Every structure is written in structure tokens, then in C-alpha cells.
Length: 124
Image (tube, rainbow, N blue to C red; front, side):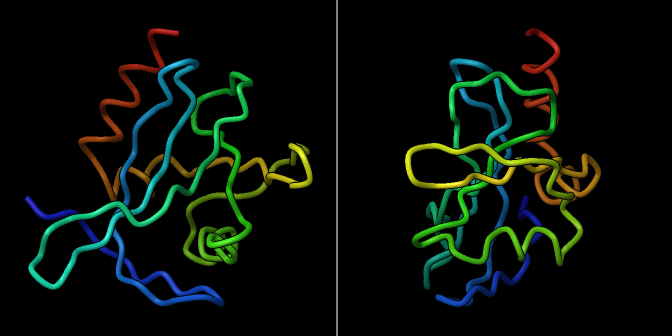
């Protein structure tokens, strides 16, 4: 079964992507990644949207990697209704926005991953 795709446009690139929803193993925080398809249709990892700063967060909250090759990811998430910024945290020389994801929007793009994440987060 194919996942729903969306066009990601940032200052650095434009790419058609699929969402991958999961959790980090050490604290079960939300993990969000993006994948793309090569010319032959094979799925390959594209980028990690979230970063794990080692602090356990409430469900559906995550720190966003919005620098370097991910510049523009936060704007993409906001413009496409994936949630809202609710804070930030300094890590080394980088400010990571704390983002509250819209549950239904995540489920729309990766229902199987969303369901697995819910199972894991309820076992905290």
C-alpha cells in the first residue's frame, strides 16, 4: 500500500516525500522522518524532521531539526497544518523549536506508523 505524499519545498530543494512516524527507543518520544522514492520507485530515507534531545516529552511533541540541510522544515510543517510551535530548547549552538504535532494530520500520512507510535507511547 502506498503512503500519501506531499511536496516539500525549502530554500534548498523541492522533493516529493512520504512521512515515517515512529518513536525513539530510549524515551519513546515521537520520531518523524521523511522518505522519497528513487527513479525506480524504491523508498529511501530523505531526512529526519525531529531530533531526540534526551528529554522525555508528552505525546505528539518533538524538537524539530530546522538547520543545515533541514532549513525550511519548520515553515513547511506550519504551512501544511502539521501543528504549531510551543517552545524551544538550546542544544549546543542551535535552538530547536518544540513542536506539537496534529494527531490526525500525522495519521493521514502514515497510519501504520501512527498506530505503532500510539501503542509505544501508552506503555511509558
